[in-house]
Structure formats: structure tokens, C-alpha cells
Image (cartoon, rainbow, N blue to C red; front, side, top):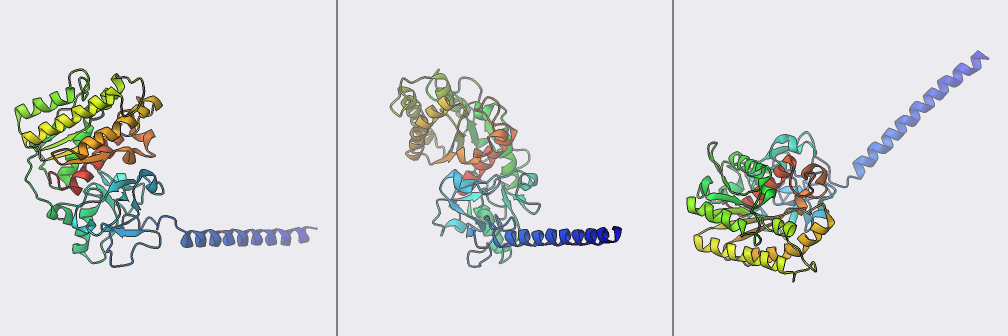
Length: 364
């Protein structure tokens, strides 16, 4: 009897190994032939638009392998990716896409979610060398979410050193002021890019209280007035409207609510004063979605009014909607209050602001 069982065992073990080997071959072939993102070695890889180097699923946009997008959900296939606006840098001059998927960063470890090969270059995750060497690499660096290093195409294409660090002013409410880490991370990105030196600082006048656009004494305007009474401001990075939404109320939550109209009017007036004072650029960073549904509905009603004020501003105003930056990351990016950013959220917000500044050649 033993002589019959033993061969059976050998036969079973051999069949099992053949089955495992077959499954491994099937799965490995499936991964090779069906890759929905173009592969980690393609996404955000430096590329040349004239060369086919991005695989079947991705395109070479602004010098990197990515996808065009016009809304935050379009980049959900990529870890930590957001839809960022197309830059004004030369590498993006021929791009018809309103935006592209990109991943912002401060240090290399922020890019580990993509692969071990991705590195943080001037605020954006990148991998590989450009197909045509340093020149192509420089151009792609300029076009990333926040550009490349000081010698990259974006920096050389922008005026450099024209705005001292103390002429860059942050004003706003608790989204900026809860930890002031957004300003700190923004300074770190600027130093990495060579826009400011190690000892230079931006001025952060944002505060936790008296920080509305229109309610309780126009606190954001007071922040600005105090700052320009001390020193000239050429660039203003601001938010505003969140405190109005939280403190004020509306009978009907819509664009006609006096709470929202007054906030937008105050924003318009402040932007006009900045133009009179010689401010050269404004970056208006508007909030990610609040977690609370009622607060989110009010923010949705206010957002287009503030965006319109920015669009019609007499001083160039770059609109930054942080919803795309925070999409899919609320557990890591938002504090338990459902409103203000964690350290990771502050880092991501700074990356998005720096991307906007790089794209518009602001304070480089």
C-alpha cells in the first residue's frame, strides 16, 4: 500500500508546482500587457514631446509623462496626484490641456508613494533623465507642478531675484495661521529653488482671530494694512472667506446671500487697494471642501464669488482651488476640526501655492 501512496504524493506535489508556475506566468503577463497608468517608471518621468517615451496610456505634457485633466477626479488613478494648472513656462506653451496630473512634494520621501526612483525636484515628484539630456531636462523641470532647480528652464525663463523675501506677504485666517506651517514649507520650497537665501523669510501676518473678509472689522484687510505700514509688499499670498462662512449665516444658502456678497465685495475692495499700493501679484488660495456638509454648502456658494473677484482684479490674481490638492487625502491632510490642515496638509498646500507661483513666474 505504501508503494502506491508515495508516487501519488510526488505526483500531487509536482502538479501543485506546475499550477503555481502557471498562475505566476498568467499574472505577470497580465501586468505587463495591462497597465492603467503607464507604469511607475513612466508617470512623471521627464520626457521629450517629439519622442514616444511615455508608454501607451500617458502623454508628454510640459516635459513630463502624465495625463491632461480639468478636474480633480481625473487624477485619481495616481497616488497623491492632483490636477494642476498648465504653466506659462515655455515647455507648456504648446499644451492645449487646461491642466495635468502631478504630485507635489517638499522632500524625497513625499514621492515614495509613487516609487523608490521618484525624487522631489523643486517641489514636484520626478523620475529619470530627459531623453535629450540636460537641455530637455531643464525644460521639463520648469513645467512641473512647481518646476525644477534654480538652473532649470522655469527659473531661467522667469525674472530672478526681483522680489525680496520680505516683500512676499501672507495674510488670511486659521487655515494659514493654525500652525503657520504653510509659510514655513513655502519658504523651504523657495530656498530649494534658489529664490530666497537661507536667512530670508516671508512675512506671515495671518492670524487665528479677527480674520474675516467682511465680518467683525474686516480683519484680513487689517492684516494687510498693518503689513504695508511696516514694509512694501510686492506679492500677496492670501486666503479669505472661511471665517465669514463659519461666523455668519444666511436664510438661503445661495449667491444672493448678503453674507457672501459682502465677503466678495470686501475681497474686491482689498484687491483694488493692493493694486493702488503697487502689489504686483496675488495668489488667492481657496479652501478644500470642509468636512461638515452645511459648511461645505456655504463654501460652495461663496467660492465662485471670490473667484470672480480674483478674475476681475486690477492686480494680477492667480486663483488656486485647493480641493484638487486635498482630494482623496482628507484623512491625512485635515485636522479633526474638519477645516484646517495638518502638517501634511500644510506641506501639500505650500506645494500647490509654490506650483502656482512657479507657473506664473511670481517671486522667483
